[in-house]
Length: 236
Image 1 (cartoon, rainbow, N blue to C red):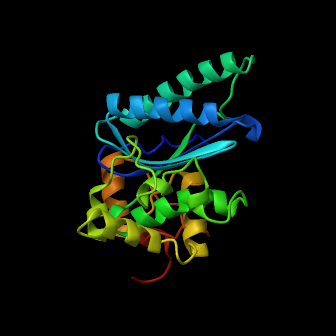
Image 2: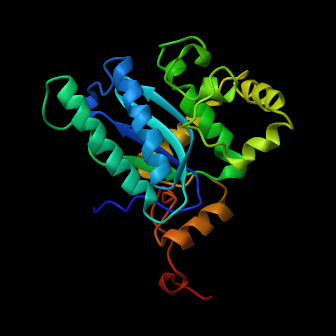
């Protein structure tokens, strides 16, 4: 079965994941991470994409970003991947592919799922057993959001203002989002959505995205399709 085109629609937050080929390491040291973030900062501005959250894991990347122009997401990920691999191969005296291939992406409804997605991304190092607290992990946006380390890369989503009137209030409220571990259903929701390229949101939101993108945005329900009325026997 042919793969559906990736969701790529301006104005919507997108959760993006890119993995190393055969799960190989894509970041071997701090210099690799710093270079990736430098490239992402440069390209996100030049290619009209606002980055709201990220985490760099040893063998994959999670990003939460909003492209502001058509096709901006694809252009950004292509340029970022290509330039990073060129430098990585040169620095580590290697050749060949680094990434798994196609990045994966899903669209996230802001009002109900933006902060849940950000939490899911920034909790990755904790779920992987690399740290006990997300603040201990150097290569994520969590420290920025709680006021420990401002990062020029991060463009705050407008919804951040709903957390408080001052930076201190917003940072404290963001930290409280992590006081209770992400619900397991949220974790599975984001995993399934990124795997299938589905929308994370309420039915009305999904319908709106489907009309904008002209493709199915939710998985089909399990089981055989229901028969149409013309297929059913017996009286109406």
